Length: 345
Image (cartoon, rainbow, N blue to C red; front, side, top):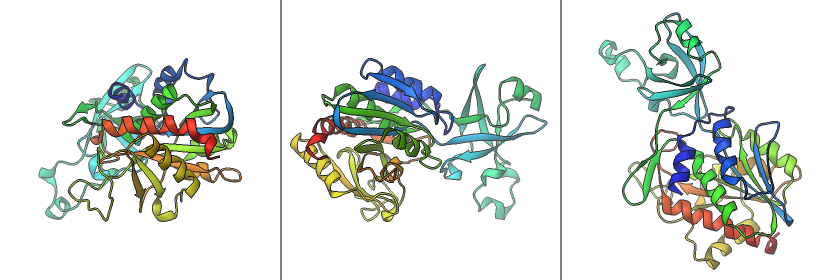
């Protein structure tokens, strides 16, 4: 699964511009489903036909990114963030634009620290005071390279191995969920109708999940995403009891109940499946953050929805870290749960 995660992570798929990632998912699922299509919103929907109840498995395609707001006469690019950036992490990062002429690389700069006043040094640099430098000497050169107002960029980071089956890279939120979905669909022997959905614009409002679930009307759904572990400095058990390498997390509730509160029936389905197959798992009661599950569960008259996530450190940065054993366990759990969905719904 590392090779699959690497291809997904290295692809560029900023919110609203997810085509490159969608094509990776399409290629992987081709031959394992009966049909694949893109809907009006841009969601990638793969259908494997079978019996009722039907199950939707959703993982979002998009990653947080940047959008060009203005290009000045010297070729420096001002931008707005797309999605939930911790702005301090952006400064001095390298970024990449995907253009019709190929990739264009740039760096995020700001006023040099040598020239900052004493009080300025004590404060983080605000995103409105940052800019992207692609090496151009004029606005015309930037446009000639294929970059204009509305162009998007993401961090230029590649997946790299760490110790102990752990890896680091960008956009594990949520290329990890996509990898789990792909492997589960390939390996499940479920006889039920399955909808594998790569949703769009999750990072900017759970938008694709809402529209795709409305159109598909599944009997039950699973959202696959990432979760916050509490096993590194600055975090405590009271913040999160999750740990890398201890299995995927099953959400009980997120956003202190303002997101989703997973039903007892869905939790029984997932926990009993895990225990029956000896798959490790962790339960997650989260104070912040939510997933596509919230939007799916509130669609039409309501859809029973669960969340299976990969504990991942340093979310919404270019150096996210996960344990490949959790990825494999999550895929196994989803595959086996899809085979047992008719026993519970």
